[in-house]
Image 1 (tube, rainbow, N blue to C red):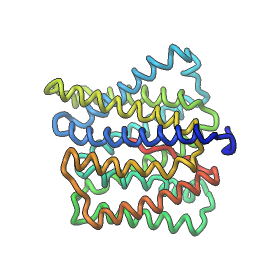
Image 2: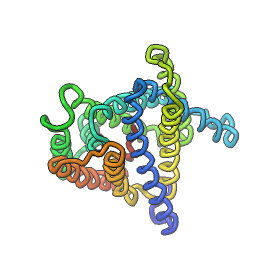
Image 3: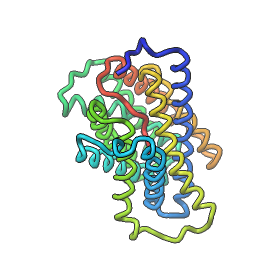
Image 4: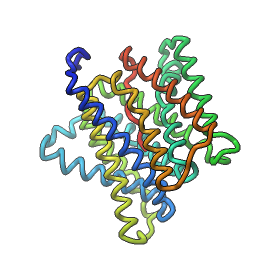
Length: 302
């Protein structure tokens, strides 16, 4: 692993640029999912996202890496990791149909706090009082975003929180596997596990795509997810996590802009306060995690 001192300023600036671009791509992904969900079943969009990912990564990386791309010491964990991320995508794609993009993205950003909570409860990690305070503050912010009188009602209000806990387990598994597995190999299996598993339900949900525009939007979902994650890989290869972490929360700003541009939605005062609390607590907790080199935090994905 490269020591932080070896990072050059130019490489750090390039890594930050890649990360900011990735967050913009993810915001476009979420906005497109919300829009296209009015025309096709959400699980069709999930299938397109993973098939596009699998085909593109294979087409680009297999000629460069050959069979070494598929070599893994933990095939069962690769399948479990891919299944967890598929579940995250399915839940988040459904949740986006019920809540604005900006608010959804803000709730996703409490994932580092949930990782801290799960690490303390199940991995027996010692968590200082400051981290517990940040976890409590982040959850308080999430409650302000998902409020009883807001846009999310009934059972749908639980979806983002279920997704965040699922994604937190994905993060913990990823942090363990990253010690022995190649990042591009994990990226390869992520696409194919998601594509194959989502194909099992495709015959049940498939319907004729209405027009060429809808087909193009489905392909855009796959493109934004695939390129966004590739940009993340480039970013974290060039810059240490503690430098990149604050910029992850720029996705909330991109998501709010896209939500306003496409749907005309502007968050209310309480939602904005909740978002600010999530950013403050989440960014601080992520920075502490990266500084201590305990549980690496990846960018959330829809």
